[in-house]
Length: 336
Image (cartoon, rainbow, N blue to C red; front, side, top):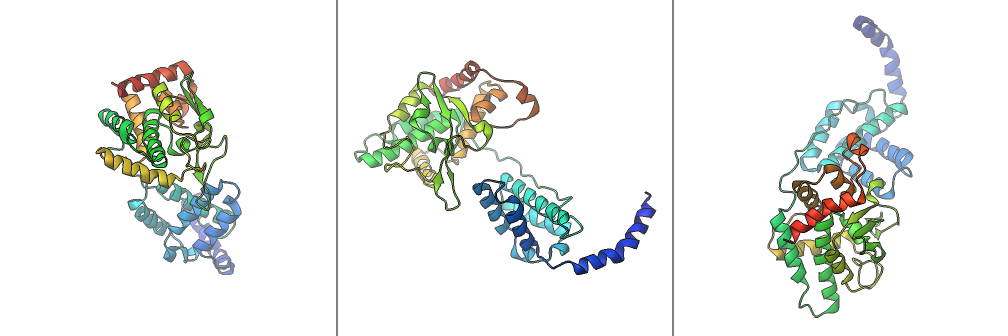
């Protein structure tokens, strides 16, 4: 069909399109997004993921949500997303982008609107920030400080808490496991003889903000894994006074709130005298230093439990011995 024929067809259909628009019930952008989330996403994603989608919707200005969805234009959505990206993280930008795209795709499929205003929406990208990991010398200083952090504390409960944050920080830096995986760790997950920590679960917060764990449930399928860990770190974990199944649980046997761990970590880092990076940066540190010491990218990917990098990496399957070799080079550099 030629361009001229397309224009003639649009002209011929214009009256029909106009009538259809007039007969459509008025529904706002915000109302449709709520219907879409409740009708298509609820029950198909985890409670945590669904709650995150609701939080994302709340980030959309009411002035935009109150407009009829049929009046939303591509330029409106792009302007909002660009403004949102100024303060949002790269991860949140991508999630908002996906929510907008899927909301309008569903609106078209359900005959709520004729045009998809998000079809050509472009996702802004932020350059990765530098300085998101500690240097090797800083890791060595942090570990040295951690080993003395709880010494001299006479109160048993306070000493245990100090041990948890100090030893927990060491575990995060040495193994590269996630905060949620650390907090969900059980004593039975420690295989001292083989030098392995079995990652079988991760702490997450439910809709009420209460920390929960489910065996076999972590961030991704690849998160369920075995992670090499040196014996001296295993011994530190086992030295934490046992009050429940979780070495990094509370004194009354419950799971630690991730936010409480963050506060204790921030206090610990402030007292260490080393510039503070967030908890997740410990994981970045492990990945960065392992690769700087010559580790294969695929090996590091398996140790950290990442799903990506993609296609070519999936063709290789590192052996347990190779993963130990990758980790051992890093472990040795830390204790020099």
